[in-house]
Length: 261
Ligand code: PGA
Image 1 (cartoon, protein in one colour):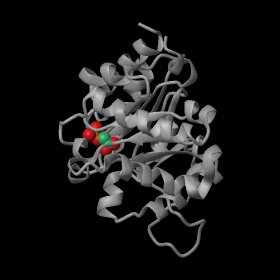
Image 2 (tube, rainbow, N blue to C red):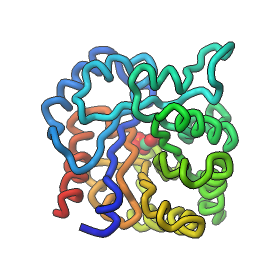
Image 3 (cartoon, rainbow, N blue to C red):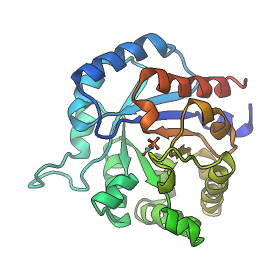
């Protein structure tokens, strides 16, 4: 087992996006009740839509973590259609995604808004999963590192290193999300290593503690190679989290790696 693995548990996180139904939740939770071992050396989480959160929390196995896909940057008040960090915590959520690229692009969420959401999550004892990643054009023009660092730095500037480390980072190159095109393990590692080295320049001990997930067409067939990289600490999974079979295939790879196989 590598030194990194001893410091950071792998996390397999399923982002259901705008998929699911009450029946889907029932079937998925029943399957995970049976298939997830009671004691695990890695973490597993699912991120349903807001309206399915309650059912998941009621029906999930105890060892499965549950999170929302978004939250408001506001405390409470006249903000129609939004859900606050306090409400998510009150419902029993453990985690929340912030700054997913689909929200950054379709809902024009800025780095500053994402930072405010991250802080809201921390203030309510939710673990934020901060999603960062460059577009294809940005990669092709050599800006991948700068874009990713600007996204992280906006949060760092607002909350500082200690609080950043209470969250999880997820590197999701936009060109690999839902396209079937996965970053190679080397491409992922290159960016993960860059992120960790930037953080280490600020505080080495904290940088070694922060989990950095990879997301973008991660599946059972490539999870082992990706998660084996020294700075890749698990995955944020979209499409392959929508059937228990596909999701468990990824969990099994995390299990093997966590046991040093
Ligand atoms: P994908 O999505 O696995 O379907 O590419 C990942 C994500 O958007 O979190």
